[in-house]
Length: 129
Image: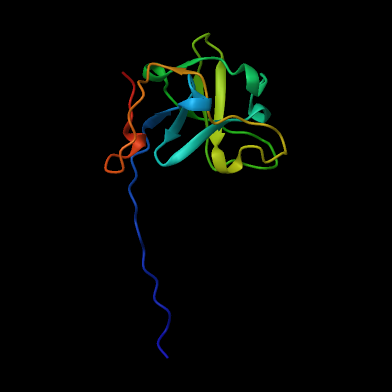
């Protein structure tokens, strides 16, 4: 029997911000992605309630890597500036609510136009105006 062989796979992903503008129940709200990762507002990393998330402006969002000393470390944690100047931290959706709390992935984000769903054009290609 020959020894196990390992194959190294390198994947290069565009990690810029993408948006999905909500409709129906999510009218007026937008989901934000960093590359393929959905970001969420978790109050564990912020000082405001999930129902009071300050408005963000798509064209001025400049995510910076953030850190936390919490026991449960999110895979990704970034900080951005809200329209009112407040710092908001967003974690990857997979770890949002890890402490049993409420969180939001549909957020008040200005400057992104809705696009019509098309199976041949992925919805996350939406960029700020």
